[in-house]
Length: 95
Image (cartoon, rainbow, N blue to C red; front, side, top):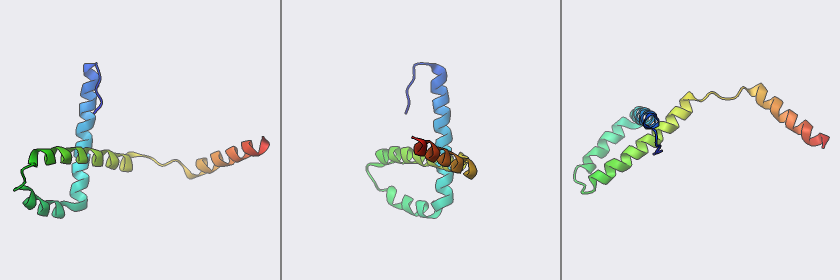
């Protein structure tokens, strides 16, 4: 994913990737474990299983990032958002 020169940065990146991977696995399990298990039957006879596994890992990482963003983000307070919009309108009308 992100490559850096420092060793500490790589460790943090690997930790974040592992967290995203785990969050993706958990999200996948919650949203469709039964259908995923049915699909495994069709995978056993494929010749491109390695590439398919790599694609699956990338998909799980992306899904994990999205799940973390969805559940870990705190929405902006509604009144602050309205106040900012009103301030922008006042600035525009003053010009």
